[in-house]
Length: 384
Image (cartoon, one colour):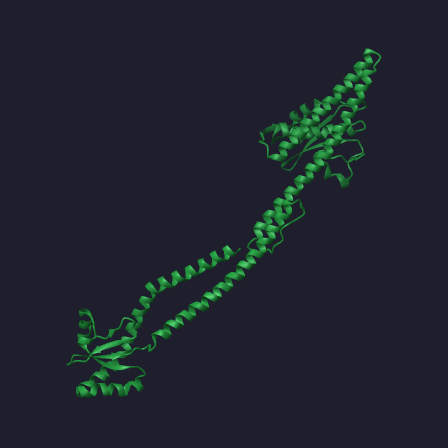
């Protein structure tokens, strides 16, 4: 955080110094030109008045007269020999042409006294250049101080909010999955905190889902494994060939169940890891559903699945992935066959722009409070 403060402070100060430099170099020059023109216009009258008065006085009285007027003018008045001014030839030509010459610091103004080799000098307007320099230093020192205070406060608030996100990330990484970053909505880090919290929610949900999946799969594995062990024990003591074949068929059925469970886990893991590539295409639902239903055979005590297609839904086409969507419908039919007392019906209808597939059975049904849970993978409503 100290480095961030230094970088920010140095950047602000460098920007201000560069702005001041280029401002003085380009804009102050233009301002000085405007000031020069302004002062030239203001000083034309006093220069002309003094020139007329000085021309009427002897040479030895001119300087005395100027000094007597200094209190009235509030600045120094001098007569300087032209050859002692040190002006360049162009500056001398300016004076000899009757124009007012401005000094380098725009604080001294010169005018040639006609008919003589003397120059009338006004100024300096700033009597103490050192005081002017000290004033600039004081202004910059005060400005630097306030910039430092502002930067420190801003960086402190910046670091305080950043530390909240950092502490939440550390706690989450150490296993506290309920940890969330709490910062103000007006904070600069609000989007970062929201992104972190969203990621934390997803990771926590994935961990809960994986835990539930592990518990459910272990439960589903325990039942067929127990039956396999029991079947093997019974097979070892079978007395007849028919009795042994019955136990072998039961063992093969349990192996098929384990194989189906493994396939379900693989498919679920694929969906959890990444979005699958769906082969979407247009499918006529009536023959497609008939084909799905006819693959099922009723179990003991169950009649075959009945299909009901309304007239307005006879030629409905839908865009779907036949493989994955068929898997979803098959799961519904399999569940209905497992819990039905004697009737399972599959119907298709159209509601506006949507196609609706109903899978109904005459079983006990799902309690209203548990209906949202049945869409979670491997969930068992009957925990016994």
